[in-house]
Length: 227
Image: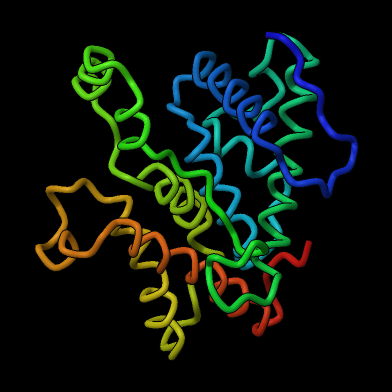
């Protein structure tokens, strides 16, 4: 694939062209593995890493993300693509970590976490009718479902890290904070009428605030990544 220039600064936020480049690299990974991988799901997974009970190293999380013991090492045929992917991945991870550490009053703040969630309705509206129909017939996920599923992949794989001591008064708090993620990730036919009545954008907003709360919760307990 053609190379997209990547900023050398590990703290530079991803620009639109770089997000597109990361999406193309994720598509390459999707083609070379048996596990469906998407940019949106990847972003949710990275978000969970940033607010988890402990810092998880790449040698642990890449095998989980790609469901292969060798992690990222054999995914790309071109070493330059792997280098580019790692640079973009790490910058996005740093960007998410900075956003979760920033003091904000609302999610419209420029410093707030902005998830890479696909606007399928907006995409369909821009496509020619025949192409939009083909995409609909192929099946498109509900808004933010892939992002939440990526987040929960990390939570559930490292369940032991997330499990609080028996009888902890904080268990109900963590369950409540995680609930919007499970609502977003669930098939629509498994949701209650009350859950369906709430806009998915509002469920996502609750999940985003939940990521902030989880980071602070684990930090208060002397845990959580600080990078």
